[in-house]
Length: 121
Figure (tube, rainbow, N blue to C red):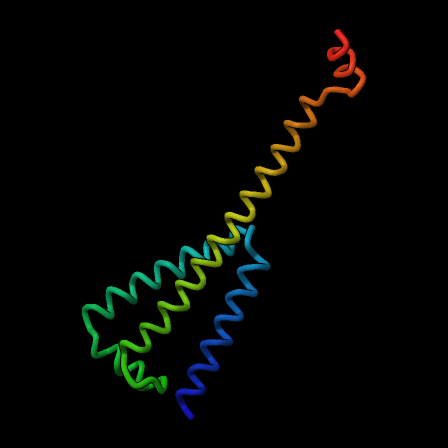
């Protein structure tokens, strides 16, 4: 029962992160949130290495059997968030390249009449 509650909370948190990230991608506040989240992940990783028994206590408090399982859940969420962030960034970059290519193509466009005259010469 408790493990199900933890799973539900993790799924809700993941959905919230996805929603927040997709809606606030370009805002400086979201970028700061990503940096703070990364910093918290690094601090928690260092803490988990130095004091693994504390992680087990927190995991038991949350209803997870082992601290390693809790860390795995957190890392899966972090990996998913990073993957989504990279995918969105690449998608935005591809869109910028497409717009740039269109602008260059329009700037260097030749009228059909002019190309026909060159062909006739």
